[in-house]
Image (tube, rainbow, N blue to C red; front, side, top):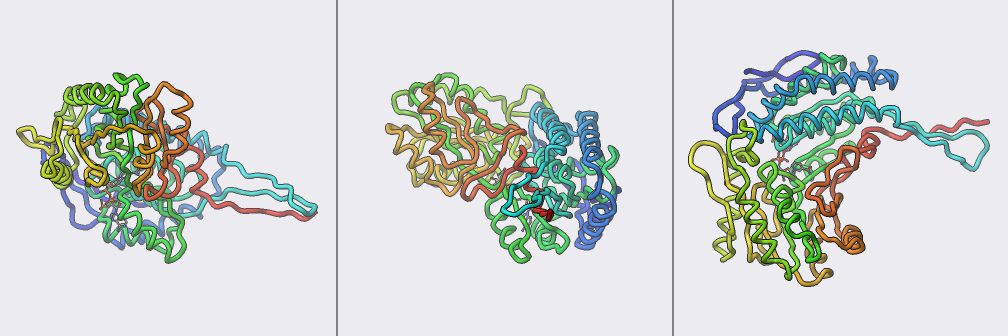
Length: 472
Ligand code: NDP
């Protein structure tokens, strides 16, 4: 398979093709020609022409129809998309199928939301009529990472299109395949040429140029906090809007009054899903001391049972990491923990054979200053620590530059609500390992980001508010 950028409704341009790997086999699964800076200029000009030439003025009901058509195309192409995603990321086929389904549901949600993008009428001090309009920004950029390539692309593209913008989508260099398919499927489903352009290519050059491009009015980004900070600094030069979904180091808090067995059975999913390459990974597990031993042995047993292996097999629960480098990062954290005398209660080894596999690891005996306890690993590594006092635990849980997600396990409703309010994070789930719902806002406090994906908040973020006053 050989792919090119998707510009103005067709494959176009691109420099020298580069291989993209299947992390389960370490072999190329396709080659992709990265977009050049000339391609970026052509794509931005084409997007502006498509926006001013019709997409901007399209009746909301027609945008609804167009987005529903994209959702249908995603569903019809689900098998191919899931296969591509699994081959390019190493994620288990079952997860890839679920992600394509959620991608389609994202388009369905925003197709319906188009006509809910309403303004206000405001009783101002003077006579007359005052009201607000929500208007599209124009040409906008979406820069997405490799951990959920199609899904996160849809989280940005669907609301941006629903709000009436034209989008330049830059996938991660490691995983451009499903984003390119999205461009082609959307066009075949009726999205006009130029309204969704897909530009694979290196973040350091193409990404920078995209953020700095004079025709781009907003950048929606998901990725590392480091690159997010760079994008924000670049965007400041011409006051571009940004929304940033960044890193995390989230707590998973188990109180003694919880259903400890349920918490232990579900907690592997909250940290080892997607091989731990998840910004929401609840990798700091706080367990009330009274139930620490009971929870730990059940958590270790449930983790050791996870089926690590070939992503193409339906029973596989944990695939390889995305790259050799990403695996080495996790291994360095584990080596450092071992050197400091911490215990690796399970996992952390490479199975024989090809593929960037690493079995899910649980570390105990860490201290609050340990890097593995404080820093984002973005791999299959969790740390567990006991706590005695709710107040002290909360102070420790919030003692991080991040604030993305959290889980709280307790049967005491007052405690659940008290702790949920006090945790400094954008999403919290009570007695659940997951808190991503496409109808609800998702994003971070502190260095986990600015702005929100999903829900009506995301739709509003791809618009400008205009106030109109009509004299009597
Ligand atoms: P990066 O931040 O390196 O990359 C994300 C995207 O940004 C890629 O498309 C990348 O392109 C691009 N990029 C890189 N440099 C620049 C630049 N200077 N200007 C513009 N774009 C650029 O992160 P990773 O993909 O390596 O993902 C891992 C990190 O991302 C983790 O820290 C994780 O927490 C965070 N993340 C956060 C999520 C969230 O929802 N909050 C979700 C997923 C990941 P290229 O691939 O070519 O380098």
